[in-house]
Image (cartoon, rainbow, N blue to C red; front, side, top):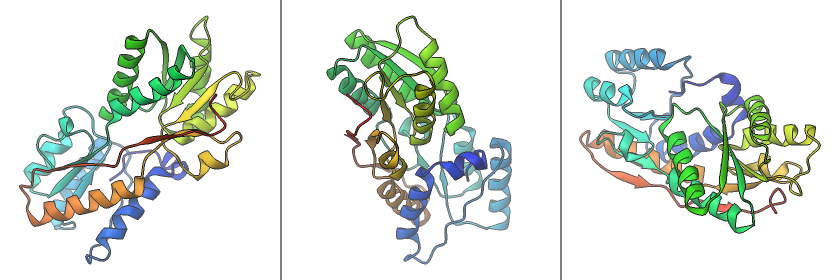
Length: 269
């Protein structure tokens, strides 16, 4: 279940790759993947209740969790086998597939600091999400340890929000950031447009790093450096975890996704 604007889902490659990974494991096991886009969390919870009453699904995968997310308690109450895509701290004992968001954020900050950048921008996703808070915390901790200045703005993963948030970051301080990290590739593409509108050049004036690597990062001009995750593999791990949860509803397991690495292209110096 995805509680996001359809426009954002249409723009963002992440969930397309994630679903491909799910299907690579679940289809040979004789299972189909049902995806439903809803308007908000209330609609999502109502759908879980409907699915449970009608016995429509054998298991669910929860995404975009917030701290103390009420969906965890709900699926437990309904008795639906469930897996959380997110940090174990959000899952209250449910099986989890997670990436080290705080650690990867620190790695990105270290990478840029190592290239001489002292003022960094961070265009994050919605702060209601636990993974966004973890990334923000990682950037803040690394910036504090290294004496860096961090300028932040919030987006919603859309290209338009990337444009608007970049304008905020560029205008937020008398000292302009010389590098900006974006929480997804789509916002980074919007950021490239805003940077150009400010008569700045990437990477000579501003380096750009996208959180997720994709074909869009490679085809952008200049090609975007990125924190690269094997999203398809994350989907495969999630599929395996939900199969295990369906076999044993009390499963208490953690599946850590493969480590991210920074792919350096023409948008950083």
